[in-house]
Length: 353
Image 1: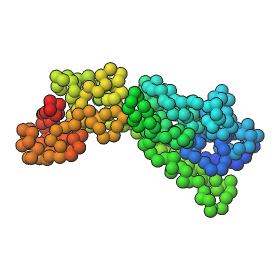
Image 2: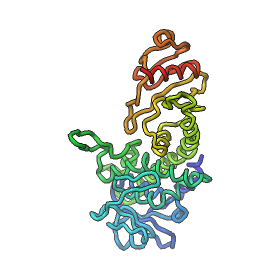
Image 3: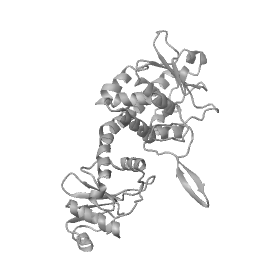
């Protein structure tokens, strides 16, 4: 796999020191002691770059040692990209991420800082051959769905906060937690009642670097190999939606694929946000599905739910007057029919209800 050939081979040669070796090689500096997910991932990301792929890692708070490092992350109270210094703990630091797709509000950790400056290079390398615009989209999506929550957790930013508009008070989501990577990386720290030594800390830190790096690569490769190729399919479905139904609120995918995030992006760029309610697609085994488009920013709200919730088979066909029905989920978010025409009829009936 790409992970094995590109990344794990680098980890096999990972060298972690408590003081700089006198070997003339490049060094990544970070702090010693208890470690977190952000500096482990920052080191992993740097090992995926051309510049630092062979660098050792020096874990220390000794300024003289850190001054000998070619790049320093998560320690030193300094953010200076020109000098390759990437700390976020100083009071003066308020940096956030901006991509071609979005501006984010979560303060960056060392992982976010390294991703901001080196992440696009890494994404392009992992995705080899993608055009620049597609790399930009994946670079943004990996930040949103993988890196940002690590930034938030390390900086003590709650996933949700209260927002007030006029007289309404509501929960506002600040970032999306899609993995418990921070907790898993943290569990590699030596226990309080383990024998304490720099050697043990460094050994445990190496495991955290490998874990975070492996999961990052899997995320990027997933977006590159599976998610991104679906975009043109969704775009085609959006463009031809009026051929499916005169309302333009139902679109048809030529095959099952990851579509929802693409649809939100495409709607925003076409200035048609919220207009499409239902998506038709074959399930790959013969029958067809009709699925509701969700409300952006929610997990379980539909723009318009299907009718006949919880009914199945003959009971559903009788109630709807549509032959060959299979089911409508109890929540109304998805339904099935043996034919494309039947799935479309379910969507049209629900649209007009």
